[in-house]
Length: 497
Ligand SMILES: *[C@@H]1O[C@H](CO)[C@@H](O)[C@H](O)[C@H]1NC(C)=O
Ligand SMILES: *[C@@H]1O[C@H](CO)[C@@H](O)[C@H](O)[C@H]1NC(C)=O
Ligand SMILES: *[C@@H]1O[C@H](CO)[C@@H](O)[C@H](O)[C@H]1NC(C)=O
Image (cartoon, rainbow, N blue to C red; front, top):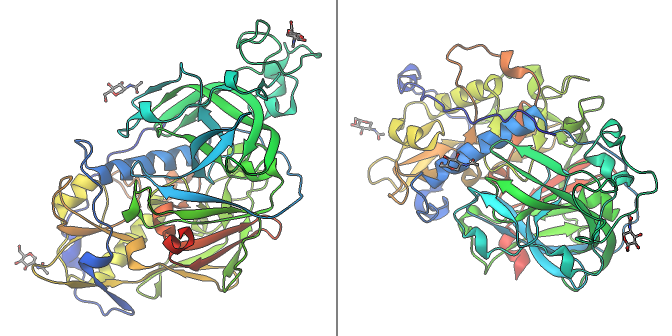
């Protein structure tokens, strides 16, 4: 079902005058960082556009998609946990974390992005797969799934319950009651056949993917345990997608954890400075991870009664955001979704790169950041414009360190995520490949409407999306049985050795 395609909004830079408004207020908890050691280096110059600006735009586009909703239905999971399944998780310069799963008989290994913000899994499919304006990283060299080469592959029929994940019952009124799944590309099994579940179209913030729902045997690793009849999208055409497929880990029946009957999963996201490095990885664990350790836990909320897409998201029980140890005054909608309407609240999403704060949250947080920096550093307008990120502070000449305010997220029950500095500031130059000249808050917003019409933009989606950049080097556990999120800082690269 086509949805309006929200476009990324260009963000006009805040006047550097802001800087002059703050006269050296004292810092509550300054954090000192050795600049060139910890901040992630720039990814290799790949495109004309600044790669970080591309990531910022992609984060923003994704935010508008998550906020606008993309319409799928929810079901319930069956539960039976066995031993945990582990997969290596790699960061990529196009902005996501990917792991490999295998589909079919014999197994065909396929990279997929880990996405906790959606629930339908899809893969590039057949040698006819078309990907328009798909990334940089040679799309052609990525593997596609060949259902014809899999003896266990079936096209999902229109009478299958999984067809109702993507189509409403009324759309399926033509469906023949007796319809059964059919083998791909047999005479009675085409996209137009009456027995076949009609094609899906998923529209993202800046692109889309379309294809047919198939079911096949899934393995989380080529020799791992087999889950038969896993329903997965066989995408035949995509626009502006990463070169791999996508694994849906959000709430709801189509999601990987629900289809596998897993009620707990966790991941450790490697630092972005290892983008596209095949030698190091973080880890995705399905099932209980062995080292429970000292995790902090915070309740996960559901957006009950909301329009379907919002029921897919994992809402956090956020109680506050602190800058430099001081709580920032935020509107109530930052903390919990408004019941029934789907607006507001904070979600955690592995598929968003830079966290998104809607203007009602971003403005006070950015102002608090500028205030806490207190004019000790100049704003860098050139870098702000090039990246679409703000505020950016110019690196002082010859300085080896900068004193920057701490940023932390506080949750119901007292859990606090005190982010490491490299999880919310990044160093960048005004153009791709140039030496860093400034550090920027790695958070996006859509502060485009010139007036301070706070709250008006509030409508549909979450007010806050906690993205993967902010989750680097954290072990993050989604405990769906106890409905809670666990986290602890941890070097993720160690888990790969
Ligand atoms: C692909 O990118 C080109 C150049 O940016 C643009 O003109 C074209 O409309 C894009 N195609 C699609 C299908 O988005
Ligand atoms: C498709 O055709 C095959 C062989 O002709 C037959 O066995 C099967 O039942 C048909 N399937 C459907 C859904 O009609
Ligand atoms: C800020 O900019 C002014 C004017 O370019 C310069 O003289 C000063 O050294 C800069 N301050 C810092 C902290 O970079």
